Image 1 (cartoon, rainbow, N blue to C red):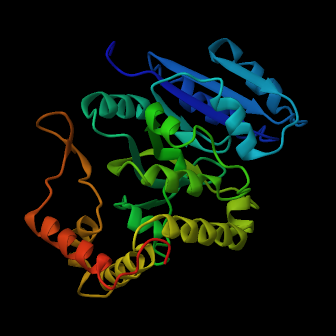
Image 2 (cartoon, one colour):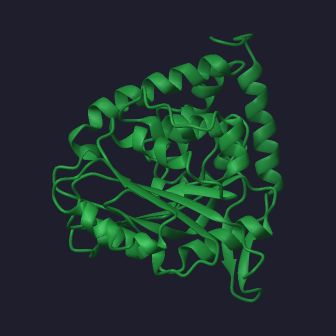
Length: 310
């Protein structure tokens, strides 16, 4: 275990006294050997700060004071960190037991990987599992396509500090709701997102949470980010249309078997799957069909002289 990379996690919290203890314990009780855990409380008045204080001996840093909201709190926390691998866990979510060891071992064993994400697993306010989705494969074109309705599960997403630094080293909190998606979009400019075929964290369904109450406003910001990123990409509009059409085909009954070749054609990397014989994670092989399909996609995307910004 001594060769595992250091991991820095940040948890933002505001008036979550009934949930924050479970979030903190899900991280601290893993016993990860090189963990730097920072908690930023926004000046809670419900007892959350007292709960955080009870864990202070095991935290690298914590504070409870008024701030400007969720994403500014995360930025405040990240400047306090120095670990090789980074991530954040919201105060109402949890990590699965042993998740940090899985994360650390993947980044140790695959130096070419800059960021990873896992399956989406949801729990309710009582901690009962209520929903699970098979992991999705991701590429930059998946992110930019309006056809993609799924989202990268933040609680199961981790990245190298080197990627964070070359992508601006901050969340853009001018996007008050979708700064997470905006960060993923910047990451996707220079690094492939690898999918781990396992859940790493649990998203918690909470009555009245803003991810549900403000979904339409969130999607408005996502559309703005997608449009900006398309303008930054040569033939971005045309390539996105081709990707959207390809993804639409895989949603049709009888054609879903094409999903994996289409994902590979769009640039999604191999998945990370646990190999029972090797007793470690390994990459699924990239098929020749996927490579040929990708070459075809790139030709279609370039065709017609769209050029950058159109």
